[in-house]
Amino acid sequence: MSHRSADVVILGGGSGGYAAAIRSAELGRSVILVEENELGGTCLHQGCIPTKALLHSAEVADSARTASQFGIDVTFDGVDLEKVLSYQNTIVTRLHKGLQGLVDSYGITVVNGRGRLVGPNGVEVDDELITGGAVVLATGSSPKTLPGIGIGIGGRVVTSDQALVLPSVPKKAIILGGGVIGVEFASVWASFGASVTIVEAMPRLVPNEDETISKYLERAFRRRKITAKTGVRVTEVTQDADAVSVTLGSGDILDADVLLVAVGRGPNTASMGYEETGVMLDKGFVVTSDRLRTTVPNVFAVGDIVPGLQLAHRGFQQGIFVAEEIAGLRPDVIDETGIPRVTYSHPEVAAVGLTETAAREKFGENVETVTYDLAGNGKSQILKTSGAVKLVVAPTGVVVGVHMVGDRVGELIGEAQLLYNFEVDAAQAAKFVHAHPTQGEALGEALMAVAGKPLHVHG
Ligand code: NAD
Image (cartoon, rainbow, N blue to C red; front, side):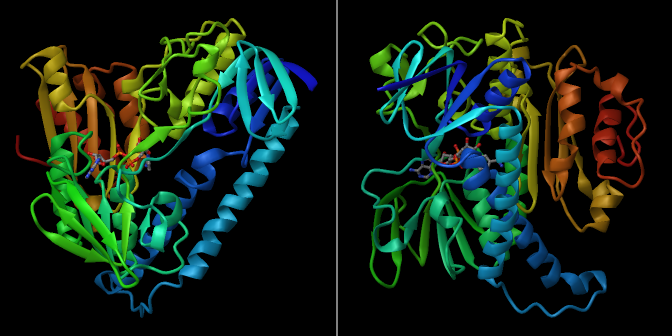
């Protein structure tokens, strides 16, 4: 067996893994990065980037379809999915090449193969042993399935991996799960002309978000003729050459061309030597300290295998954190609540910090909230989007949650996350002028309302 070594060995080249690799290299460490597929992981190849390209095509389709409302004559002739996929592929390929060049420019050695942890400092790839002073586990996640539902069989039941590259737009689609993936695909397919029904077990869409936001989103989806069946589970799924049939706990039976199963993503931690080496798992996730150390000294974990938000930007941040921790820089522990969350549907959902319910649990009943409806925001009216900005304010006056819904509100998350992460006093922030007309003004109006001096809404 051949042997190589480096200061830092990283298993998995997705967002968390490659961020750890780049930051370690910046800090002067030698790095070996082991990746069995392609550098960039789920985010670049099956997640963030290709889905957002689809969502952009969907937005263009909506603009074309509704152009006459803005006085522009356009004939909308439908969606050429082959061209959509080619556009999507161009973006992914370009970013992938850029990432390969970047990693290469840092002198990071990429080993292509399936790695297995074989000891506190060692990873085995094929017949090579790779050892390091520290090992970072960054093996990511995969779509979860449900028992008794045959994914892939017959081609009508798919996960987001297959939904991303469907050769044609389904006429009718059922989506199991009204979380982030379910809502984004519902949005894309509805924009492409499909009739979509979402089945969500919890009482509302995006159940992890603030309840007010779910209400606005559900209303907007109803207007888009997207059906949401909430508080109900699937009891049986059957399929034949013509359709997939879904029986619900309520007794309803739904038919469609395609069923997308979007009930969460599970960690890729099985058969990788983790438990055998002493890395403790809990329900498949790697147990870590808040400094992302596993139960084995010098073995760290980042990204979707660590319990918490499964988001690429959390992976980046954790990768940077671990590289700095290994280098002895003692970085500040990451506050998970301060990580922004954006769902890129039409309309978008963007949030940071605590929901109203979570804030009341933490601070008691004196929590204050203000919801500013985008009906009073000029730019949102120009864009013909509806929605709201909701602020959650602790009894001390500090902003502890910002929740937004409406087209393009994802772009407002930068200001929102500064309010939360710098623990800004709402009345202080209300002094800052927002450019007119922007959607950012809605955030400013909500802050002014908290300060007791609302402008474009009667207090
Ligand atoms: P999710 O956890 O966001 O949503 C899954 C939903 O399925 C939940 O609302 C859950 O209640 C529901 N569900 C579970 N079992 C069910 C059942 N039997 N019947 C009906 N509903 C059921 O997970 P996801 O949407 O699959 O996304 C996976 C991960 O990927 C998430 O962590 C998400 O944050 C991440 N992601 C993020 C983005 C983004 O940031 N824009 C986009 C896509 C995915």
